[in-house]
Structure formats: C-alpha cells, structure tokens
Length: 194
Figure (cartoon, rainbow, N blue to C red):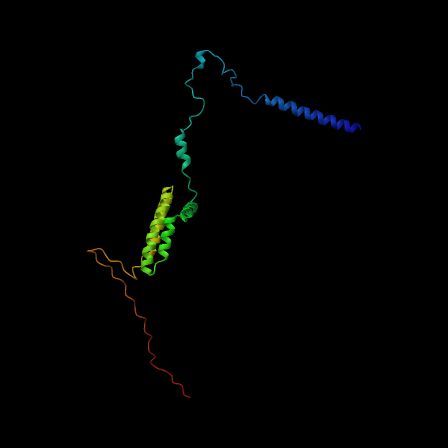
C-alpha cells in the first residue's frame, strides 16, 4: 500500500513538473522585440514609417505569377506524356460536338475511296480546328498541327492517283514495277525410267 502511494505521488509530482515547465516555456513564445503598444497613441515622430526595410526584398506578384505559371520540364518522356494527356482531354471535350459528329458521319458514308479520303480531309479540318480553339498552351497547339498534318498525310496516295502538278513544274517520275526474276532453265534434266 505504501508502494502504491509512492507511485501515485511520484506520477503527480512529475506531471506537475512537466506542466510548470510548459507554462514557463509558453512565456518564451513571443520574441522580445514585439511592441505591444504600437496601436495606441504615440508621438508623431515615431509613427512615421522608417526608411529601413522590415525584411528581405520580395518580388512583385506579377513576377511570382510568371515564375510559377510555367511548368518545369520533367524530361522528354514526361513532357510527351503531359501533351498526350492534354490531347486526350481535348479529344474527349469535342467528341460530342455536333459539327465534328456530322463531319465524321459524312466521311463514313462515302461510296468510293477517293470520296472518303476527301471527306476525311474535311473532317480532320473541323476536328483539329475545334481542338485548337480549346487548346490553352502553344505546345499543345503545335502538337495538334503535327497530328493534323500526319492524319491528312495518310490520306494522300500519290501512287494510286497522283495529284496533278502545278503548271510549269516537271512531274516526278514514278518508279515502274520490276518484273519478277526468271528462273534459270536446268541444262540437264534427269529422266526417270519406269
């Protein structure tokens, strides 16, 4: 029983010591140079702002905006992935656009290959024009131009139906097909005797 009393008193004393030390430390929280009476009436000589700066020189808000508005490059692969994500977001935004849907349906209803290629070219014009209007960064606009050129480049089939050349320009010769090589004739054929 005496042992329990000793343990309780010891725990109580240690709790009190910790509490007192926290109270004493709380008094140290405010720095000693704080003027608690700065808001009250003071003589005008001390109320004027001093020419000393209160701290380090800080940049203007416009400079901070310029610094933080440009995302830092994380590498070639990360930039490509970021552009791909932006492109997918734009694609998802315009997929239900009535003009884009109508141009796609019109292109798919073509009867001949030539007609379909012409209609797909018009579809890509509408498609990438809508995406470019929604694009926010110059990088994504450049990427959209490259994608548009690659899609429209796939539609050109100069070997199937060469496009007419401009006047005065010499047409580029198209390579002709080469004949299949002939097999050499065997000089000595073996005859089977039956």
